[in-house]
Amino acid sequence: MKNNSSNNQVDKIETTIQAQADMCIGYGNGSIGIMVSGLAWLTSAIVSLQFSDRKAIWTLLIGGMFIHHLSILWYKAIGMRGTHEKGNPLANLAMEGTLFMIMCLPLAFGLSLQHSEWFFQAMLMIIGGRYLTFASIYGKRLYWFLGAVLGIAAYLLFYFKVQSFGSALTGSLIEITFGLFMLITFRRNNLKHKV
Image (cartoon, rainbow, N blue to C red; front, side):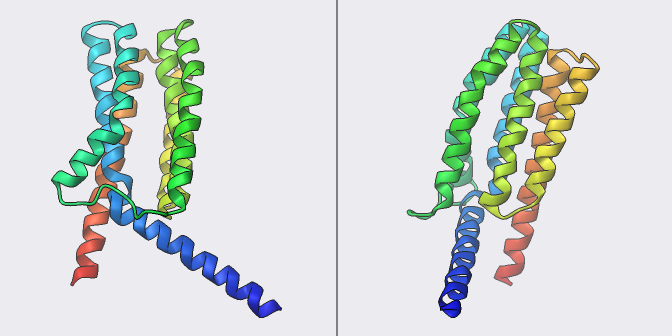
């Protein structure tokens, strides 16, 4: 009886590792999605500087709706799958994280009615929390670091009363830097496995 139980646990661990490997291969450790998100933040920062905070908020909200689709196009353009295998159980976790993030958007928007910069700081916190689940989706503990950095940045930006432009620019720099690092790491690891 104990052998069956331990065999089931080993099967579950192997299945989880295989599911994570599939997500990593399909999405390059999530690197492109992070960079596209960072570009949405950068666009929002520029809109804040050139036009208004209100338009910058809408830029980030609307831009956020296209992150997944633009990421898929980018993945395919550089020769990656941009998808996972059908039946991968971690796809549900990714969708649940996305839905939770969407459910938090009214909270961030409500804060913007008090102070526009609070929207960006709240979004950094919300997105940072979402990235924590990526540690399980991709099997990369580095996502805990990304989530923590975004959360700490949100707190410091709030504490020091940084305006919308600075808050959006901070989000963009963190995500683009981290996304580039994840892409370089993914490419380097894949080259090692092919050799």
